[in-house]
Image (tube, rainbow, N blue to C red; front, top):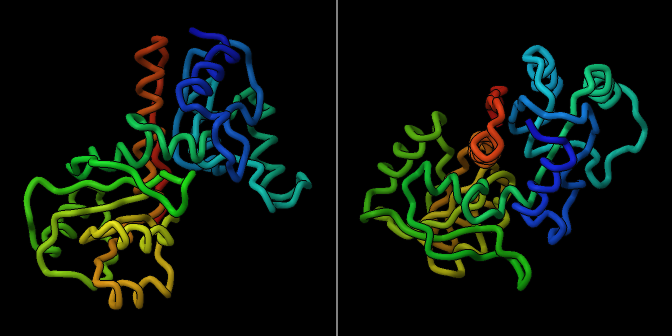
Length: 252
């Protein structure tokens, strides 16, 4: 057992949450009961995940995608009202970490995706001087791009969309989970053979063909399952908490 404020403080420090300028608040978003014994973690604080957490009688819901995004309406109606009502009625805390959980060198989405795919991390890169969310590295050996597509499908359980543009044999890879398809220009600039992310844009096809790089759109949800799961396991071990990862299926 741990107090809620202690748990949040520990996570804030571990993920250096205060150092990020993000699209939503990081850390405690909805306050519930003061003592924490059980946690459910998942990718997105959807109604389905909230209902699953309530059904399991946990104290904290820990997610990557929480609430209160910049640009969304501030009124509490409809879907937002229903989600908040379920949390508040059951004294269930919501803790969310977005960019801090993407970036963490060990527990982050990008580090954990590398682990899942067997990629050796060699460094970070981004779209500007203060942006180093993405990672680059390499496969153990050169392989046909078709074999890499099959490897990604086997490890993640979802066949990625492959936009071909590079050489048939690949080894140098860059990746950034979620909706990071726009990082492909920076990936091409550092000379990798393949860039992996979650989503895809219409313009990505043309860029791949003209820049000579492969792109694998492996799924926003599926590429971001691993960071929050790793964080939950870390907290479980650190504080002897009961923590369960609940995967709400999402084809995107």
